[in-house]
Image (cartoon, rainbow, N blue to C red; front, side, top):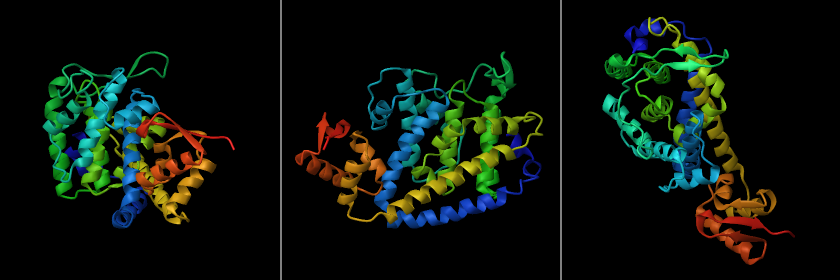
Amino acid sequence: MKSFIDIDRTLTGQPRGLGPLLARIDTSRGREALFQDQMPALLKRLSEDARIASITASNAIEGVVVEHDRAEQLAEGSRRFRNRNEREFAGYRDAVDELMRLEDYEPLTVPYVLHLHRLLFMHSGGRGGHLKTDENLIVSYESGGKEVAFEPTPPEQTEFQLSELLARYQEAKEKEAAHPLVLIGALVVDFLAIHPVADGNGRLARLLTTHELLAEGYRVARYVSVEERVFETKNSYYAALYESQRKWHSGEHDVWPWITYLAGILAFAYEAFEERVAAARSQTGSKQERVREHILMHAPASFRRRDIERALPGVSDATVRLVLAELRSEGKIKAEGSGRGARWQRMPE
């Protein structure tokens, strides 16, 4: 909310390097559209991998960790849970899947934000879908003792400020007050400063970021996990947010550290996306030959079918299954278990 009250003041002093970075991102966005018709199989494989990575990473940022094998099973739709972490993982799965299914992205509203929050806690019994009723101070223990790092909006003002934020953000979008990524960054700064729910604010902010990236045509969020890169740079994530929220209550804060961080994350995602597309294009030999070579020469001695599919984007499930069956009949590999969850062993020469 505070970032949008006087948006001209908020956006004064844009860092010199941010403009070229945003231009590079927009150039990549333009190229991305070309691949959707040319390489649909590759994009389908990348989207499947990005989905699992995003669910895993966004939860891990908040300390919600699930074993790799279980993460894949849950991502594929399993509703048999062993612990609370798996339940929270499944909640983020459902929320991400809803965003990816959308064809039209309506303006953000308080009810929709709470709907996403309800999905987050649907399986874990948390109080999803409600605004906070108690203070939720952001504390730090870096100095050795408990210290309040930031004091979010008090509960009695939360609904008003959140509603105002979303309305002002939408107005700024419609007026094209700034580059879309600049406005998204300012939205996230304000959302996390309000901290509108008792639990799950970080995950909810990342879902809103994905919603708005897709709404603005930055579809790379479907093919490369933005959340995974955030997890890998978690210290920078928190440092940039801290810098941008200082003096937020008085409206004298500086949104640029966070916006610059977000732009850097998105630029990295586009670079990774284009590298994967280029790698797929440069591969020679038939797809069956590439799968066979990878299994015999490069894959771990013990692997799953999904590991091969991830390593060779653009190769269909049917091709991988065919090569696995051929190699098994030749005695070069054997299977432990059956179906998609089977683990394969490469036999010694």
